[in-house]
Image (cartoon, rainbow, N blue to C red):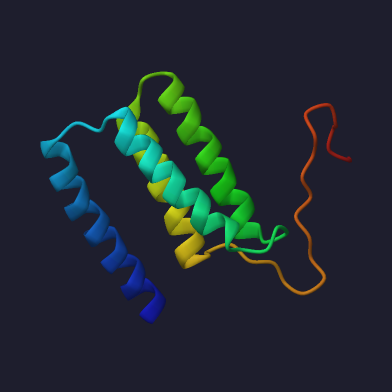
Length: 109
């Protein structure tokens, strides 16, 4: 129950922050600052942490959006990465591991 309440509070805070952010259109500089913050937070987690993996994917997508000139989407993805690190919603049970395939690999059948 407290986790649900904390997620609701985070969502409200992010939406309130989003309302303020919509007053001023995100720029390349705000995107780069958000990505830098998310990278710093992600670097604080162990390299094999699942939340770090997902945060790094969001950071990568933020950079793609920035490259396309979509700075609002860049900031959004970077904020999602930071939230992933702070909340750490993904976890593995002891002994479990995330099976990440390379681009040239096929999943086992």
